[in-house]
Image (cartoon, rainbow, N blue to C red; front, side, top):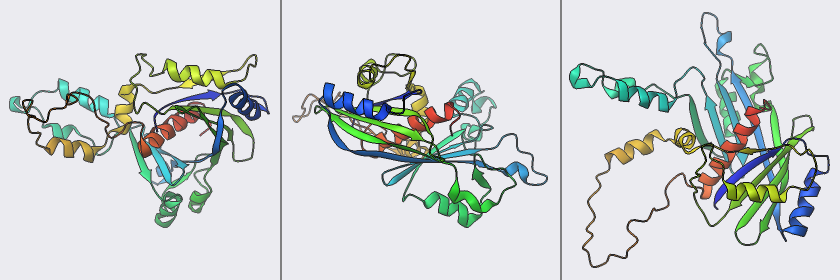
Length: 299
C-alpha cells in the first residue's frame, strides 16, 4: 500500500463509470482487481432537545465502512482544535511565574476525534443498546431514537484496477440512499511510496493529480475537484493521545556512531505509524472521502 490521492468528478454522464473503465483498460493497460465498495452513514446529536440543556451546537458522526474496518469521524464544533490549544500554551505565562499548569489547558476532547472500529455494524449496535441521542442527519430530532441502524447511507460502487506494478486506481459512483448517483470518486494509489510530503500548501501532489487526470475520459465541461489535506491537518486528525503519552515516557538512549555494526542508514527516515501503509492507508483514504462528501453537503 502507498501514498494515495483522491478526486471528485462532479458531473459525469450516466455512462461515466464505463467510460473510465474502458479508458483504463485500453490506454493504460489496466488489469481488473475486483470491486470497490464502501458504505457511509451519518448521524447528528439531539442534545438540544433535552429540557433545560443549552447546547451551542450539535455534534456529528460519519462512519465509513471499508472492508472489515469502520472509520468514524466525530466532530464537536464547540470544542477547540488541538492546534489552538497548543498555540495558547505557547503564549501563556509559565507556571513558575504564576501561570497555570499545561495540563490545566488541555480540554476533555478536541473538535475532532477519528476512530477505527471493528466489526462493521458495531457502532450502530452500541448506539441502539445505549438508546443514545443520535439520529440520522436527515431525520427530525423528534423522531424515534430507535432508528440509528437506518441512518442515511451512501455507498460507493465501482472497480479497482492495477496499472503496471506501481499503481492501483479505484473508481466508483457515489450512490445516494434512494439510488440516485451523485458524481464519482477517483482514487490513485502509488505503491512505491508510503508517504509523500507535498510542497504545495493545500497538500496536493502533482504525481497523483496527473494520474487521476489521465484516467478521465476526454469529455468537455467535466468538473473535477482534487481532494487533499495539508500536513498540519493530518497531524490534527491523526493525533493519538495515548501514543503521544507513550512517546513522552520513552527514554531514548543515545546511539553509538562508533559501533562496528554501523550500516550507514541510521539517519534515514523509518516507516512510522500513520504512513500510508496497511490500515493507516485506509484510515487516511476514508478521511479524504468523508471530507469531500461533507464539503458538498452530501453527508
